[in-house]
Image (cartoon, rainbow, N blue to C red):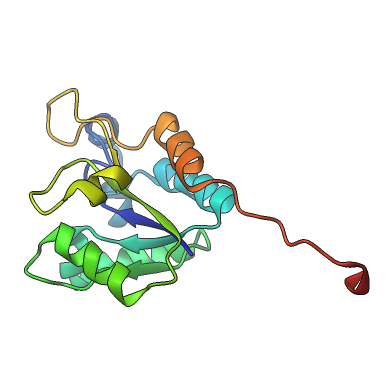
Length: 165
């Protein structure tokens, strides 16, 4: 199994997104999430066959988590979550991996680097840009989607033998 550990703020939203929606009416979740980033993330999921595991602090707010789960279901994305352990992202990811030994590869999409991101976790981090320094940064970009696909590899197509034809 391939996994994308997903942060929300600074990944599925950005300073530019918040500037663009200031004067627009949006639904509750669209006031927090740039739908275009979900569409882009879905491309990486479809290409790699990866599952998505929420590592964001959004897991701790039941309303946000349920709204996010529903939004992802609209795009046929099943959303898992890391276990809550002292709100310590690195430890939570490691615990999730320990409980899921069938994980063959993973990436971590986050705009922050946490103290508990050891050398092994850092190898899997795709750091989402915060270069503009205004808060949420630039969010998920096309280059990040390409990096996910490059690191996880494209999903293998089922090979049929002669008996199945």
